[in-house]
Length: 160
Image (cartoon, rainbow, N blue to C red; front, side):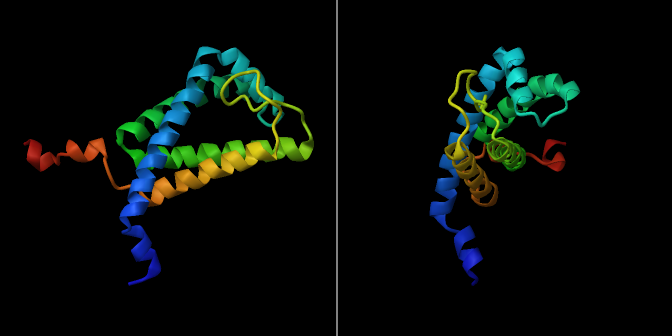
């Protein structure tokens, strides 16, 4: 038995993945609420990064928070959590790339993650995002417990 197989079947990894899944789900729901409530302020935060073309800032400011909210809800309830986790990983890679870009380009902006009046981005922000990305990767590979979809999964043969 390989070490990867032992790790994959570890009960501790599965329980840790559930804790990470609930934490990340709550985090993304919390982050999305502010952005959904104040899309214009969030659009300004996006524009401050100087990465997204100006024509796409408004679309991104409206769509991204709803994707965050949906993925957070799916993670918490355990429905399509692997797909939601893949989206969250992609968003975290995007966020981490943007933070590193701002740090390297020395652009003094706040994160814009949770509210408009945040401290300027630092390497601690990048480290925090990298930690969240590591949690999301762990969830993607090891999450197997307490999924709502497993309680109500029927095949077409069972329904007919």
